[in-house]
Length: 122
Image 1: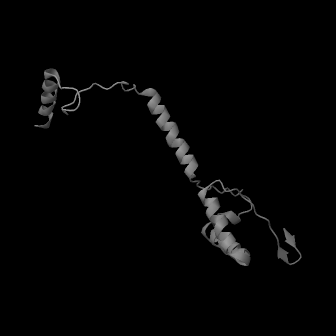
Image 2: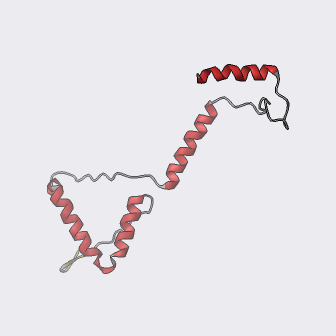
Image 3: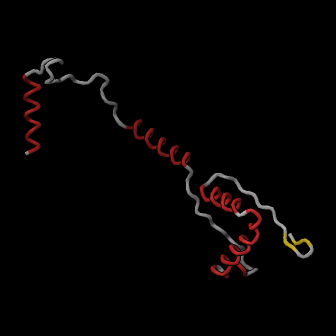
């Protein structure tokens, strides 16, 4: 808004993305120099995008949005839940084969099966 010989604007945005948080924190750190930085940033943008000055075209600004830590966590959990729902469940009681003398004794069948599996390493 133009007031006498100055421009006055109020800006506000959420903190829902990293980019918005970073911009907000940076502008906060500038103290009373925010206005000068905004003028510089807009000037740089217009230099890189002179088509934005064309009054006939409506300016479309597309912000590439990154995900917050919470959003990434929710996505990963959803994918894991989908995968777990579609995969067969492991047996609740594992087959007990142990060569540990303190555990149950290994049977001949267990030893034969173990020896067959060793062939895969040759």
